Image 1 (cartoon, rainbow, N blue to C red):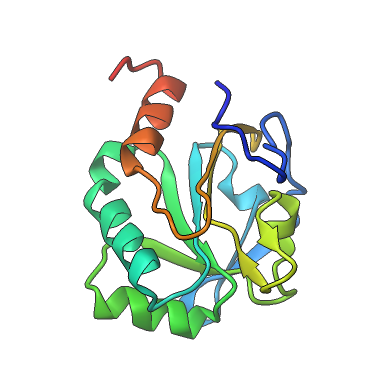
Image 2: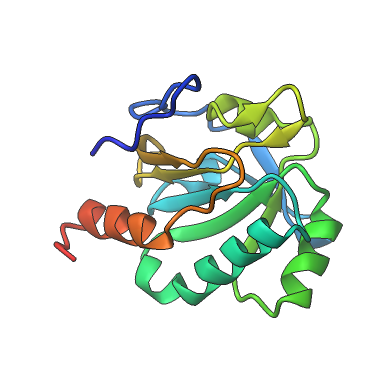
Length: 163
């Protein structure tokens, strides 16, 4: 299930990220890549909270949450967990948020989704299967939103559904 070409940033399909890599969740909790194993996981990386394009994508992902089942969906950025939680709350978005702020961009880098020039995550979506392997990815060029329908279709294909 190849993703769209990633241009200069390679598409990590087939990559199995280090299970020890972790993201900060609100209220001091953490989730590791290893914790995501056992079920599909969709990581929706965004450059920054409270920006118009990222906010529209957060809303789209939250609206599609039911269609993305059974995947665990995490919207990820290099903002702090507190900032991401405030953003999610301000939008009343029923979706998990996770911070890649420390070590700064570590998970984003592992997924070929970090912009060294800006210090932000690229606008990349990564689908992990239940073993933690990257099976699909999408990368949008700067300033353009992703179509959440592409992620819904990828999750459906992973489950054998021909939506």
